[in-house]
Image 1 (cartoon, rainbow, N blue to C red):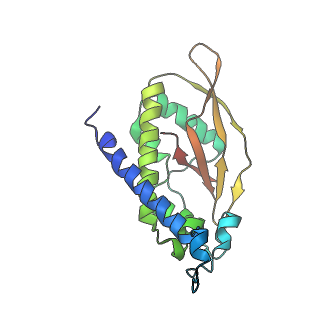
Image 2 (tube, one colour; image 1 turned 135 degrees about the vertical axis):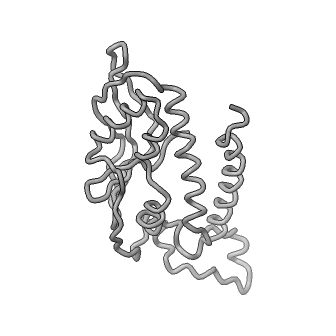
Image 3 (cartoon, one colour; image 1 turned 45 degrees about the vertical axis):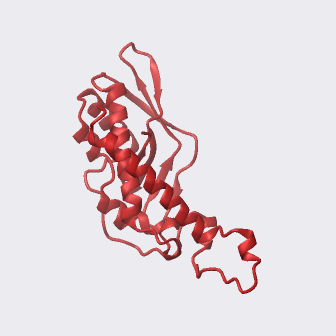
Length: 205
């Protein structure tokens, strides 16, 4: 395992995470002493209100759809436990957003996508893809092969609506384990919904 591609990817992902954080901080959290200096002018950021709102209001409507998405949250839960039972990383990855879905549908509505940050969809996808790959490995390492029965989703926060999609955060997958007991699985961080199609947006790695 120490030489696996995923293990080699994590240091690079961590390094890029630091660069992304620095870029975002530089974009809209300038040192107060610098702001007070004579002649200081903040960088142009006409969309800075999106940070407070949590989304960009000028994002365009898009026509793209999710491919291979589940028909409901419950359907997604059933597919998830089926993939776990068969220890199928490929099936789990098909339940996750693809790069094109993230870049074409979600990214442009996130505040981090505004020009002032200097970040690109590929920057963000590099990190998200690493998290999805790590999450799939974590799920299968901890649960792979188990015959779990889907019961329901529990949530600790409401879904958030965007122009082109909805994000379901604070989800906990409730299953019946092989001993017949209820178990709560916190592996799913967020689910994206578009036009009645549901896909995994982020996993705990």
